[in-house]
Image: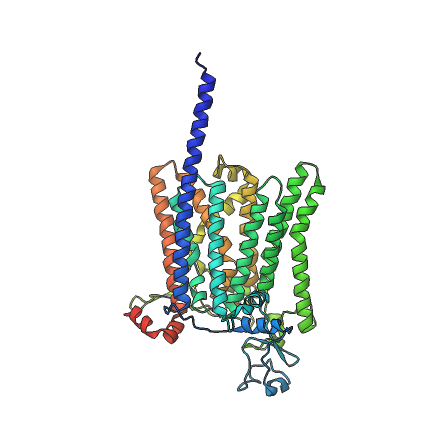
Length: 518
C-alpha cells in the first residue's frame, strides 16, 4: 500500500543529503582557493621583505635577537654597554644633550643599562629556536612569521564565519575578500620596513587573533570548551606580552567571553558549572599580567613602567611624558587615520604615495601640545575603502536583535552571531581608541586594530548581498560595487605600501626599483 508519509520523509531526507553534499563541495572549493591564496601571498610577502632578492633578507634591526641573547644567560638588560659619556650626562634623555654621542636609538636607558620597552614575548620565542644553531636573527623574520600568521588566522576566521552563518552566500565572493585581508594597509609597508616596531605590533595582533579564534571556537558549543578557552586565554596573554596596548581589546574580549559563559549557564540554573570555564579563561591572563608586572619591576622598580619613561627617542620622555596620551589628539588623529588623502603621481611608480599626516590643528581653535607628530600615512577611507561595509553589521546590532535575525534568516543561534559582531567591533574600537589619544600617528599602527574591522566588513558585505540576492539587477550592481571596492583596497594598499618602502628598495635592490619605475 502506498504510504505518502513515508514518501515525503524519504524526499526530505534526499533533499537534506543533496544540500549537505552541495555545502561540502562549496566548503572544499573555498578551502582549496584559500590554500592557494595563502601560498600566493606567502610568496608575495617573501618578495616584499627581501626587496625582490628572494634568498637574502636585509636586516634593519636585530633588537629582539639581542634581548633573546640576554634572556639566554639570565639577564633582562641587553649585553650592549652604553657609552660612558652617555651615562655620565645629567639628563641623557634630552636629545640635544646626547647629540654626537653613541646611543642605541629607541632603547630604554636605566641605571647604566640598556633595556627594551617592546613586549618581551617575541624574544622568548627566539630563545626557544636559538639553541638549534640560529644566531643573529633579524627582526624581519619575526615580522614575516607574524604577518603570515595574521593572514592565515584572518582566513580561518572568515571561512569559519561563512560556514557557520552564511553558507547561502556564493563561495566565489569570499576569495577576493581573503586576498584583500592579506594585503590591506599596512601589511605591505610593514614588510618593506620590517623592524622591531613592526615585529612587536604584528606579534601582538597575531596572538590576539589566535585568542579570538580559539575563544569563538570554544563558545560555539553547547558547553564551552575549557581546552579552547585555556589556549585562547594563553594567546591573549601573549598578545599583551608582545604589545602592551593590546590590553584594552584583550580585556574587552575576555569580558565578553565571561558574559557569554554566565549567560549560557544561567539558562540551566547551574552557575556552578561556569566556574571551571571562567578559571580556564581568567587564570592565564592573571598569570601573564603578573609575570609582565614582575618583568617591569625587575627592570624599572615599577609594575606599570615598560620603559617608555626612559627611552632614548627624538623627544625627552622625562619632560613630555604626561603629553604622550591626551584627549586633545583625538580629532587630529581621526583626521590622519581616516581622511588624509594620498598623493597621486601617474608619471612615476608606484603612482600612489603616502604623505605626512597633518600636524597643525585641524581646528585652529582646538589647542594641541607641540609634541604631536605624524609619519607618512594615508587615511583608511582611501587605502581600504571596503571597510565601509563594517557599518552594516554594527548598525544591525545597534538596531536590535530582531533586525539582526532577519539578516541571516534560517541560520542557528543568532545570539552567538551578535556576540561575534560585538566582539569584532569592540576589538576594533578599543584598539583604535588607544591610538586616537596618542601623540604620534603612524601607518603601522593600523595593524593594531584593522584586522577585526576587515572581518566585520566581510560580514557586512555578505549581509548586504543576502538582502539583494532575490533581485538580479540590484544584486549585480551590488556585486560590482563591492568587488570594485575590494579591488581598489588591494591596489591602493599595495601601492601605498610600496611607496612607503621605496627608500629600502633603492638601498637594497636599486636595479629592480629602477626597472619598476620605467
